[in-house]
Structures are given as C-alpha cells and as structure tokens.
Length: 186
Image (cartoon, rainbow, N blue to C red; front, side):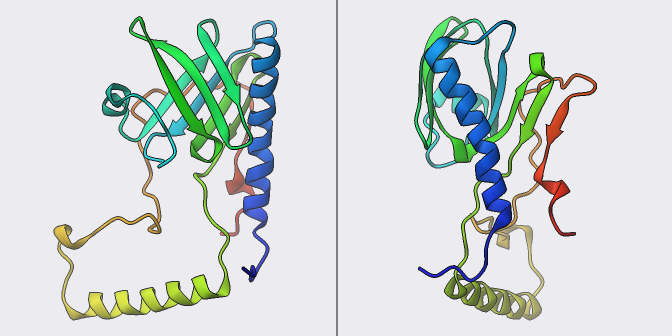
C-alpha cells in the first residue's frame, strides 16, 4: 500500500507514546522509583480495550487509572499494557493498547502528555473514497433537512469533545504538558 503523504503528526504521536511505553517498561522491571506515580487516561470505547463490564458501565467513554501503591502483574508489550488494579476492594485486570491512551502524567516529575486517539495513514484510494463520501453527503444534505435521528456517528467522523467521566489529574503549576495541537496547522 503506497502512502500519498508523510504523516508527521502520527510519527510524533508514536514517538510520544514511546515515552509512556518506556516508563511502563521500567516500572514493570523495577517498580516505581521514589515518589513517582502515573495517571493514565484511556478511551474505553477503543475496540482493543479489555476491562470488566462493571468498569465499562461506570466509565463508558474514558477512564483514568492511577499507578502508585497498589498495582500488580504489570506486563508491557509494543502494543499496550496489562495490569491488575483494585477497584472497591476487588482485583480487576485491564488490558489497554497504547493507541487508546489519551493522557499520561507523572505529577512527581511535573510531566504530562496528551494524545489523540489513533488515526490511520491514508492512501490516495482512501482519499478518493472520502471525497466521494463527502460529495454524496452534500447531495443528501441538500435533499432534505437532517433530523437528529438521521445523524449517525461513525468511526471516521470527527470525534466530539469528550467530557471525562473521571476527574483529570491535577497538573501542578509549571508542569511540562505537551500536546500535538501546538504543531497542527490551523
């Protein structure tokens, strides 16, 4: 499959996810050093996320976990991580792909990263299909006014702003939070 353009945004996103991957690898090998602890926020709707149904019900869109004192069986791969955490006194296993992670913070280090949920490289054939779909959508929209029941959210549709169901970690003043929006064309 030929790529019609280089996706620097994806390259930067992958590199930044490598920071999270390396921090978890070190933690799995030797535990958390000193007072370091992690807040990891992820999209629970991502198809590769594996969490108990009770947690999915409580966090239908997004969930933040804390790795500090009580976590077990941390396993890290190139694609994601598995961990056992305690929720209301019950141990639960979670499997989270790095592609589903939306934020990572280490308050002790005053460090944080924000990610956009994965997007894919587009080929010229993909771009042609999208252009055809946009043309068809314009025709449909011009034919009759849309009703709320007619609007269907698809995987390819722009993601709405998600209001988290769990509080975001407090980022201390002076923290170094890096977002890709700085590099995006407006």
